[in-house]
Length: 598
Image (tube, rainbow, N blue to C red; front, side):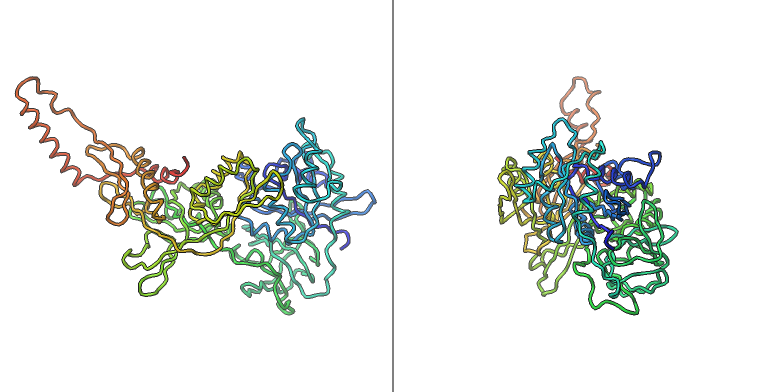
């Protein structure tokens, strides 16, 4: 037990977290030169391309210290985006210490401070590490000063390294061994293990990643998951060493995996406590919460023939991602599909991209929305996340939408632009704090609906990548909500309907109408694209028709001849408009999703 160390690496984006993990794995000799590849802990193509971690990974490193002792170092890798903040909190709860990485050329940045607070909440030992010391632009003294001043950590305790060049890796490992405390010895107590991740194996079922706090677990034991009370028989336990390494038991302080014939990832809850069925603990480990979807969107196949294939793909995808929630849905414009719930916008993008790549699905997604609450005149409450189920406006007594507490940490020079962006998105009650001289922490109350579209991208753009954004749901607040319908040639297109705040309805309607005008091809008759709230038209674009020059044969003669031909053409166009159908191309639905990207 004395020779076990459990730790995580936390850092601002692109400060070298994955590269340092690669070097630690190479130093421990888990892979040889031929097997090695960059970002070895990132298994998905999408993670490697975007340079982000989506699924938490774990690996046990064996390290022989300078004193000759051999240590088992459990590295628990963490995802870095606000959508997965709950998974990060559970991973940090499984550690005793963290490496806080700072880029020698860029210094302490916004996400570094946010990560520091997260580690402090769990009372972890924090080892500051300055990375990229080999760069020509590296300013080690400046980085040390910022660690001392901005983070309040002792700059004399800083470890210097260059993960890319492999410099200082030994010093980092020695610091982990020397400074991070070993886990407490609690093997005699009843079993209590924290689930911090789970993934699906097609041959073995769900493989649960867990940290054992008390007791021990062996193959053959009957375990109970405390959230749902399900009892399973343990088939195998072991450590992760880039492959599964079976062990006779997992005892208190260990981080490893557990296979118990659990059919799907949905049967396991991240943050749940595992205990023995015969001798359970009195209460589960603290910090568990049931993660609920906050963003909703409908998925439809591009061709209706592909619906059975989409059903099959979603069933398979769900095996690996328990956070995705979906149910059947249908639309007059797009046919059969599914209404899905996501943890946030990045989660939505990942699901869309993985369905397209891994399952070869061509899909259309409707505009993301959130859950709204309506109180009707008779006092009954109604929760709506799909605009199709928006109640009759006459029956609505009041409406409410979810608000978040948005915390933004930025360098001071971007303060004006960020304040303007937040106020544009109906932000209210701003609070400003100065954690350090050059950095500002702005806290706003904002409607979640205003954040789910492109807020994070806009924030990154105006702060040149230095802005960090985190949010938590606070409550539902009264709001003047209306349903905006889009009419094409007088016909309502249900897939384009959206619930918006009354003040933003015209702006949104104009953007959608303009986008559709670019995407819908011209017909032989005039097409009106309108945005409407109930019976009131609030925006309009018109697609002009193809027009044959019917007066070309009239050369000279009386003007009435030309007028007669034009009148005849006009009547024909009018009749055509009454019976003509407007084909809306699939690209039009996709373009509306990008209506806020400008």
